[in-house]
Image (cartoon, rainbow, N blue to C red; front, side):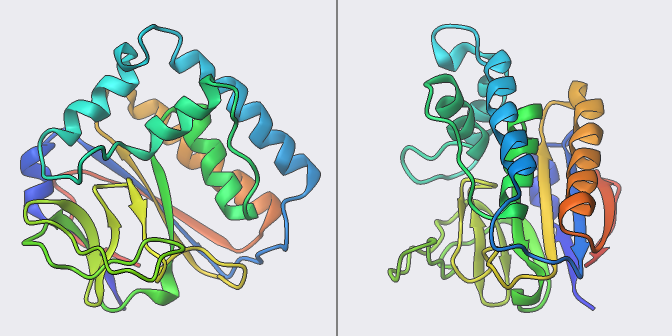
Length: 234
């Protein structure tokens, strides 16, 4: 069995962080999201606007939290947390549209609770999944690209034995482990860097589980990790 291992280098940067994990196994991936799930995503885009009412955009508290976090490790120029991109689209009237049912579910959770959430195909990991600072040079192929974009020294990323899985926390997903039409087992993670919002993290995890079981079936297990947690079997 493989493990999800959070290296001490992550906790040294973010000692009060929480990582919310959902393991969703044996689910059925539909060809497209049902009308009700698409409506839920539309509603979530509207709800997201309440988190970014301040002007300028960068002054909204949730944006500040993740921008400050991204200053603590090496990033590619212009890299921002995935939640910033989602909230910016919602605010500008360019809402996040439907992709695949599971992707729609975690995007809806991100928008509703203003937290970055990502998902990977469990069956495509090679060895353990790790989160921590890297020495750089981990192979990475962005979704839709055949060009290798290796990690930078001092970058914070998710990686396995084959290379990087997701760069700069939840900034960019890789092609190799992305959620596909035929995926059946998924690893989802939410990064909470503001400890005052732990109740929102719990609600987001519950939302994902409820929607997944409603539309996709399967078995879902949640876990919230902190710096005292050991490896999580995935």
